[in-house]
Length: 273
DNA sequence: AGGTCTGTTACTGA
DNA sequence: ATCAGTAACAGACC
Image (spheres, rainbow, N blue to C red):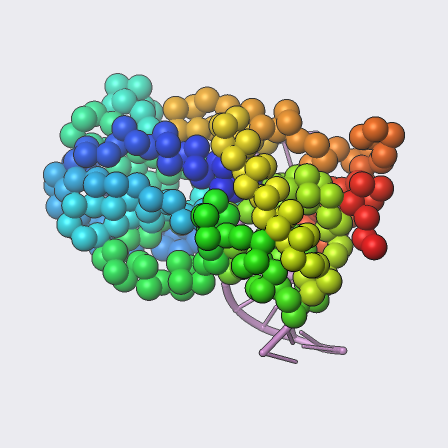
């Protein structure tokens, strides 16, 4: 589930690490979606964490030496920060970083679809997983006109387009349904059939829903928690996700499968034609 | 026991 | 080249 709001909540929780220095790194499980580079163990003691950046669903810790550590949370990845004295290693704690301020940063990921990467900043920015990213969903440069131009020729359905990180980055399966409900656009509409006004509405809804979700600390399904262990709240504000059979003003919410993923929507409110 | 799940990539065949 | 469908990754949950 970690989509943009959960990743952004995580980043905000990591702020106390800024200007801390790394004193120890421990890899417990090298084999995640990609292997954790062994070179990460060569980080010199007292290298500083300079700043923390989000790109779509990626988290980048910039270090003082032109290197950086990248995290992707996949489906079940979580980053937690503990004080030394409060920390005991748990199941699926794959990567642990300790600082000179008695902080412990822990990457836990039961399904191991996430990853930890490390390298020179310039090399990381040239990696495919970064260069392929479309404009960040919360970037001011994401406009209705951008979306319109990007999808003008495609017959892919809009739900799938929103999940395509190459078009825009940050939206995942849950928020895609919520966004399209908010925009009153059917998930089945094809990209090339959407006009500029509809694209503008969709972009408006993307920003509105994602910002609202960030304010709620993201959504907690199963066991997502933020860096300090607090739960997200936005799942209580879902209008359609996981609401199959519910009614909104008498209109039924249904579940369909698109591209192998579930989509929830209200056909009465989100008309196809 | 079997189906489902929040992300992403790679492969197939049309 | 583009698109839809499927499988893969690995574990938890129902």
